Image (cartoon, rainbow, N blue to C red; front, side):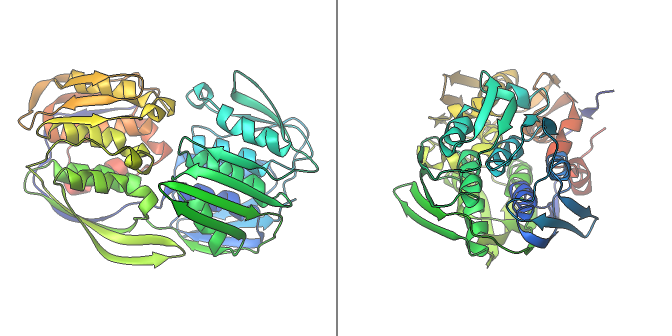
Length: 441
């Protein structure tokens, strides 16, 4: 039976301190990279969500054991040749695009054929951007229209490549880096700047990686085939999860929140920079560096004089997962907000650009959308008093959660379907909202 959320009133003024679960991107990367280490790797604060559990189940299917409890996760890695599975085995990435794309890189040297599948939503997404570079390495991949399932067989002699990644996709870049890690010789990647968690982990593990950055472009080289031993990692809180509470506070009356121990690395904080341009009251406190990642506490205050933004294109890749929240803020900002080159949103769990446009129109906001752009005519006086139902969003966890935030700040009576989709990335989302004071049935 599908779960629904009923919300009939706005959240009241609050002043809270919260913690959010571990970063999803880092949690998945820990599992996958730990599987390639020699010996035991230990992570604290691993995110226990469906995507991360899919990653753990996937490496188990590939012959890698793990131990998981509430305090920590242990991965018992066997090195670059440690995967063991029967010919034509099937592995399942569930709903996780990150997991599906990154595991293909680690299968670069698989000796047997393996079938990679995903759920209904993931099976609609395009994998051509990783298929091309993996074939350049020498991997054999067969698919129908570059979509899951993928039939994959590695190569005994992977060859290093030179590759340009022009979309700013951290998933594509990381897939290539994971393949390069297991490939003799030097692989070079020229990439539009994007999330750099994999590069930071490689640097921390003392792999032979070199990185230069210039004009929003990254020049990366990696000398592969260097083994590494198991490692310990204390995963900071997820900025994407924190963003829902940042926006909830900004748009609520006379409220404050302090979110502790969050990953605020520059590649992930596009939403904070964008919202600050819009006059949001967001402050970064107690900043420190942990294994290359910037970690801090985020303090937010209600902001009732938000202004529209002509969003700089260079910020797009740093805010790609948070744009639905940013669009919600724009709906209450004074003026017309403009976003260009955001077509990547159409390649997420659902077509998020289409969802955003339809959602904003549903709540009475004037918009203009194209294939890769969006204009939003903000209304600072927007208040809702009608009945609203959110459905048919392909169980996109972020579409579901932003709908809940909108209901709590805008008023009206809301019925939001498929809230079990939240378990993909943030199972504790509703329980934290209730602790803050939200009434959700």
